[in-house]
Image (cartoon, rainbow, N blue to C red; front, side, top):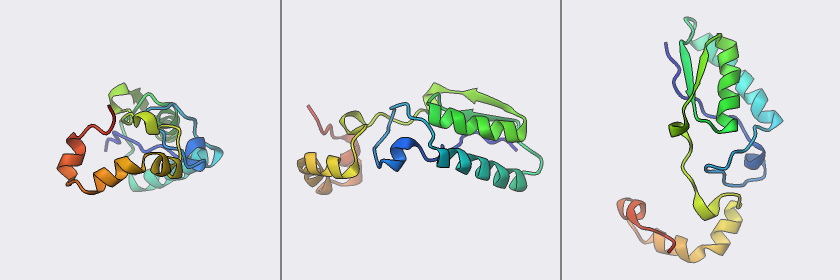
Length: 124
């Protein structure tokens, strides 16, 4: 069984309720513990192991993948194309900050269908 992509554990910015996107944040202590716990669960569910793990080059994903890799004794392949998308101006802000500062953007988005929202630029 191959484990190709891993979700990172909780980061310092997750704890601060900040949106991350491509900002390269660290795992928080709780995120490291989560990664170890998930690695143990995966080892139980995948008794034949994994051949490799793919992760983005962001520290939070790479660190999580390295914990999994040590548990399985397998290679971790870092792939920048797996990186989370940029959140632009929203990166580093909290949800409350975003929704208050950009209320007009969200009011416009609310009136759009999903397809239109995905194609519409929100900023000049």
